[in-house]
Amino acid sequence: MSGERARLDVAKTYKLYIGGKFPRTESGRYASFERGDGAGAVNVCRASRKDFRNAVVAARGAVAGWSAASAYLRGQIIYRIAEMLEGRAAQFASELHAEGVAEAAAAAQVEASVDRLIHYAGWTDKYTQVLSSVNPVASSHFNFSLPEPTGVVAAVLPERPGLLGLVSVIVPAIVGGNTVVALASESHPLSAVSFAEVLHASDVPGGVVNLLTGQRDELLSHMAGHMDVNALALCDVSADAATAAEKAAAENFKRVRRFDDVDWSADASASPWHIEAFQEIKTTWHPVAN
Figure 1: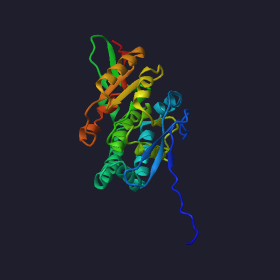
Figure 2 (figure 1 turned 45 degrees about the vertical axis):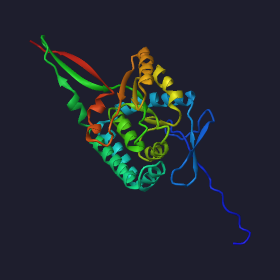
Figure 3 (figure 1 turned 60 degrees about the vertical axis):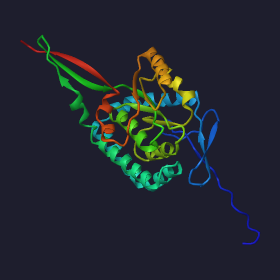
Figure 4 (figure 1 turned 180 degrees about the vertical axis):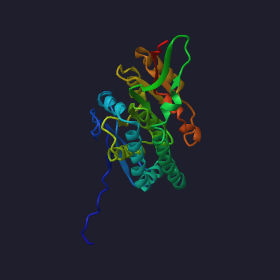
């Protein structure tokens, strides 16, 4: 129409996900991410040290409730995440394609992510049977070993695949009753931030999963050194950076699990032993009457 002005594109701002809410970064810093599909740019938060501390506070506050939830309830919630993700499969495939993933591969990655969620939902009431044991002892006692959640897990997520790698690292941790503060892929962050919207609509209690976007070099040392983080998952981190993180983590005896050169599409990457990675095995003695 004559005289009509062309409408300007509005660049979407992807926020952080902390404590079940979507705050803007405390630092006020954003990075512009140009979509590979030519649909313009989006703005992604560059989380600060304070954002990370806020996320740890939220995660710590959620540990008691989530670890005490029944295995059945945790399984139902994780299954609900899968349902919500499948309902938005087209959006996630589009975002993966925007980050340079071929259309067919993007659709396959979303489908694999849904399947992995369902897979781990089924493990919530079974992993304790696999990891527990009755131990032989040379005294008149029963001796039982059983897994308990570590607590707050900080995770540096895989650079690629953006969605399947995220699901494969975060979900085993929460299956076992832990809470998570995760730093998304720096170069492919869109799926992680959209996944927060899925979590928000999936009955996941606030603080159980907290998702940050930002720079690894800036945040990794804080993740490793924070005294209220109980475990650290490192994906696609250089050997030097991982060694430095392990030294910092030793200050409060953090459990560190490195995932180097993992094929996240392989069946082995859905192993129940990934649940065990963030469990503490506790032993109980009970006397037996002679």
